[in-house]
Length: 104
Image (cartoon, rainbow, N blue to C red; front, side, top):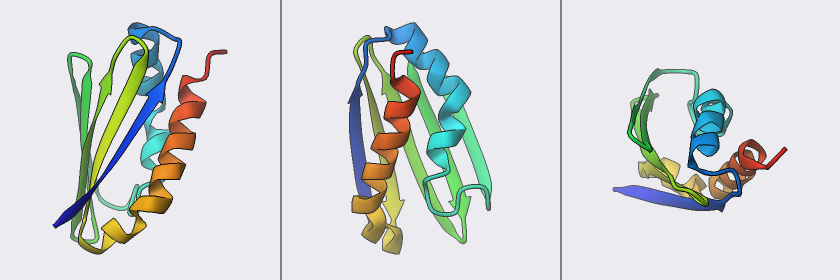
């Protein structure tokens, strides 16, 4: 059983700039996930949808990010016991995402 985390972040960057920032900075977001950097990691873009999978300590965390003109929606599935961390992780994901998407 997995626990989903869904975070939607509004932005004023436009789709292309939001995607560019995510392409260059997603590593900052993924590091808030448990086991980041310790196991296999894959990612890919399909149009304006980014998908990833992180495997660490026998657990698979997967998710996707949809980039739209005025918002970015992150969906992350936390397996088993990691689901207990969903509340705390949601706030950290929101903060990391907002830092990437803040208009400078």
